[in-house]
Length: 477
Ligand SMILES: Cc1cc2nc3c(=O)[nH]c(=O)nc-3n(C[C@H](O)[C@H](O)[C@H](O)COP(=O)(O)O)c2cc1C
Ligand code: SF4
Image 1 (cartoon, rainbow, N blue to C red):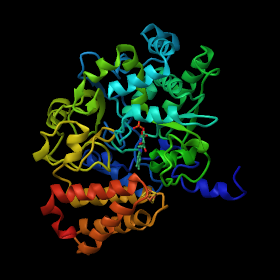
Image 2: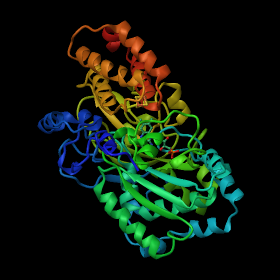
Image 3: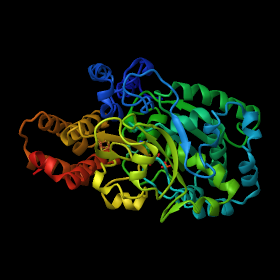
């Protein structure tokens, strides 16, 4: 229980406390990139001060009334989108009739050793952003002692430009629950929580119904209970340690690590935390076998990945692709090119994932290949920036977002991100800025930030410097 008065300190952290997100326009990067399609809506969004950076409707121009995106899978047999492509499954019986639950039955016949081995053999890596091998996390959580273990689902999907988790949650909630049950069995957890962003009210309604139906069918409530927690509007709550603080009712600042959350997570207990897409892949790989899953993809990037393409493309939407697809195929074959202008840069994995220049579009969608060019797969939100957006404007926009979402726990990010946002905004406005000072602030951000938010902002700036040296010479020379 918090002492009197501290609840205000918690509530004041959030952008959407007491707000209805549906009533607020989006100020996120995907809408910024597509602002030429609806300039008035974008200007209105900039004037509101609550800080809403994504409704998960990035396939539409700013301010457009919500419609369902184009959805497709490039795989002969979809791993993740079968039920989404069928229009969504919102009844437990219908889920079972389509083969749901078979993986859970198989898992219940498997030993813990066999389950952990299957995860390792599949090569599945976390889809939330970092791409950490899921099997290693499962092993660490399974081996951890402690009286109580937790499974936590990260359904914060905060990256502007990403809406893949949204459709898994809204159209395939039982698949997520089944993935949770298998993961909980593998690590020995009896309690689970889904942390869902407030910006997805429809997903919240769908999940409440699905959880109750799963309880009525005895999937939940005896060996394992799974509950829903709705956030209050904060990008940083997607960072896993901040998310745990939010679930504990604290101010959601990032935690210092080690200890890792697999041993000291929620309420100090061993915790397995995964992104929605990661857990939704689990039933398929158990049912069809780890080898079938590992047969998709390239190198150390196995399986399939969901990509969400923003409204800058001629055919925006939600796509399932195998790893290894060259980035130019994403632009031309999935997105059918840009709606206007030519491509200045492609943001593949969210605002901290760098910007791929047109000259490097031969790079395959692959964790290691993108890392090698200073970019990242991230969560797979693909935003195309056209040549009507100067590089400095993109830099200023990313840092404006980054500074607003900094949790304030460490100085390099709390002070540095805000100062860099001011400097880059001035540079984008044509003013001269102190390049040496900006470089020093970026170095501090890269080396001394407590969490991936500050480091990611620095990496973004470094990627731009590397790929667009001419455009940035004026401010970072
Ligand atoms: C600033 C920041 C924001 C993040 N936001 C999200 C998010 O919205 N959703 C998510 O799944 N992971 C997010 N992550 C990654 C999580 O910290 C964590 O690595 C992930 O949820 C683990 O799940 P996975 O192993 O399935 O990827 C974020 C990380 C950082 C540094
Ligand atoms: S890097 Fe930024 S977001 Fe992360 S702990 Fe430091 S202040 Fe908070």
